Image 1 (tube, rainbow, N blue to C red):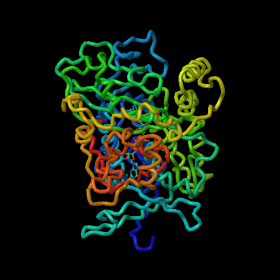
Image 2 (spheres, protein in one colour):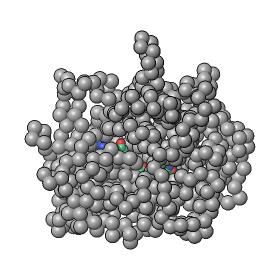
Image 3 (tube, rainbow, N blue to C red):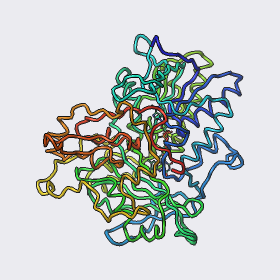
Image 4 (cartoon, protein in one colour):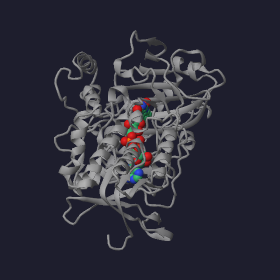
Length: 557
Ligand SMILES: Cc1cc2nc3c(=O)[nH]c(=O)nc-3n(C[C@H](O)[C@H](O)[C@H](O)COP(=O)(O)OP(=O)(O)OC[C@H]3O[C@@H](n4cnc5c(N)ncnc54)[C@H](O)[C@@H]3O)c2cc1C
């Protein structure tokens, strides 16, 4: 720690998503009311706030109303409001409207937003309240006191290292941002939480977190596109292309200016190692029902992100000495509803309330910050998460057990057949590749599949996410044992990383000279979705934050 610049703050927020921004805004307002002067910092790994924000997104405004009651007058960027919901089951060629919309999916009156725009707007408000926002700074290491028991801040990543980790001419050493309280709001599968968990016991007694990966596009439709005359503008689908093998579903939401948000969310508990997440998304778009909606459209932006659907029983310890966990990093997703914006915001706000109390007492130990857990237990957030407490485990199961569990949960207020259902980690669910599949693995896109306008290959998709990383930097993806990839993983699963990564980061190639297989990485394509660290069957991949400022540059996601 000695050589690095240290900057002290009262509170440090790591991650500029809705959880932390709502937390920071609430904290500043509460502190002002109590006459407390605070120095607050927020770091975000993307170049601008909102550039790494990707969501659906239908937003339940309940938390926003509590945070900023005058949000509409304050210019909150709402695309449109939900006029009505529709839910379809897709077979291979047709779509069947369900006779009722499941209760979690009833969104009428909620707002449809672009999370990138929403986050940018929240960041402006936080900044006006005095929060010091530092975009382009990735937290790469949790700093502990000398006993390793208390979080004292976060180290940001060095900038200007070459591929081998040697400083170049423009080298800037990372900074140690010290804080009385650090708020971890990194979103799903936060990389700093890995370091936190090695020292402090935040996961024991919880079920493992399970995940889904969503691939999403914003599509520009012609004038008077599909939703113009429709009394619903919020569509969810089940069934095709996922069938029985994987859970998940599609969403299509109206945006303003004749745009739509379209995405497919795929549960990472899938078993078939030949599953190619991106190809599933393209199949979804090609379904006759969906392609009719997309007709004449052009993709404006594309991206992907994992979300944690583990729910209430996967919520980690929310407070440790010197730190709290909020938002998706703390499993705050209402998984049955596919909604985590309002729940994440609320968790940030409850954490802020606990932090203000801790600041007044001058006590930042686990017990003092643990007030946050009590506040959560007494709030609507707990009630909402609790209703879906066994959902993630149920959908991870095979058919027909999945359906039976879901039906039982529907009838019993979330309890289902047995309380606190067990679940396997997503990295443990793949079946070995079948003998017959060895020959037919689709490793490459077929020419002619894509038109570059509405149907994009992976690389054009990456291009439309505006993803860029400085090329000459240490690879942020660590493969711990390459022999495992080329031998065992190849034999048993045919390298599923080449198919679950939506950005074509992982390729298996044969060296022309030695004729040996080797894994080739394209880290510059990385969309920061984190699917690789979650799904790799050997846990052989670690995702670290690349140099701050790199990654996607979403504008309307
Ligand atoms: C495809 C998809 C569809 C969804 N649809 C909906 C929907 O319709 N409605 C809804 O309510 N929710 C939806 N969600 C869920 C919702 O988007 C998330 O639950 C919510 O964004 C979580 O907020 P967060 O602030 O906790 O994390 P995030 O929004 O993930 O934000 C975390 C931020 O932290 C930054 N960060 C991470 N690590 C670091 C680090 N080490 N240093 C610095 N910065 C860091 C990231 O770049 C990011 O900007 C959807 C999610 C997905 C993926």
